[in-house]
Length: 281
Ligand code: AMP
Image (tube, rainbow, N blue to C red):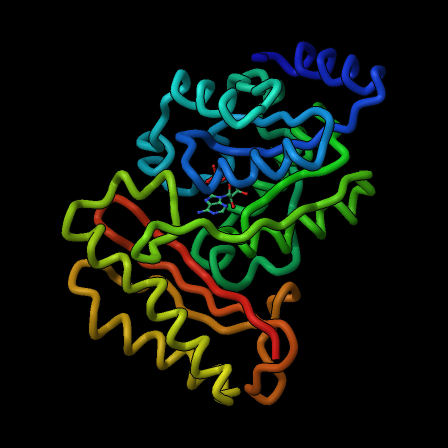
């Protein structure tokens, strides 16, 4: 489906037949991470739909937007194999009929992690999701914990605008060496790809330290930073942080407590990679 009205009509038909609708928003160039969300949406709903839309308003960096990998035909086959009933692939004009005259602003949880290094990113995410949720009106939406800050902010968006939608957060799918699957991994050189496995390794080692009793957020952050500095020759650290989750607040007295997230972002020449682990004390 390419227009909001076609998609809306299709969904209305499903709803008239009494079907529950599960929805997975994506930017395409689909991989096993997306597939896991599709499978879950198919399993838990009568009708599972997805969208493929590279949303311009969530990219600060024009080059990142213009080079974002795309393969529409492969994506459609992939979605069909997973049991997705319909894929919404709107044009930029269809999604933004009056440009950015009316947008959504996210004022909380955006001063840390990706919100801090990508100003305006989550405003773009919240704006496009508000449009997509309104068009598709699903009962359930599926998001990956790969983008844990996004999950926390989408939960706030759903509450703020009273969307009658259940948010389902799904685990991170990884390559065999631990690298989180990402559409942007195709932009890594062979040497960068090998090195990128350390991102997850550094997070896991820090998580082990927390399990062993280390509570100081600064000590955990330093541990991850040192591990990355020792192993990364090509990548450059954007951020490393340890915060409460989903509130994304700094720990009181610098001591991790309750549910927490260890998160990082690393720049390679043509890709910025993010990863995280969550735990509970
Ligand atoms: P994207 O196409 O990158 O915007 O991602 C669409 C959805 O797939 C988001 O909810 C992501 O968090 C999720 N996703 C992307 N990569 C992974 C992964 N490796 N494991 C689990 N979910 C993922």
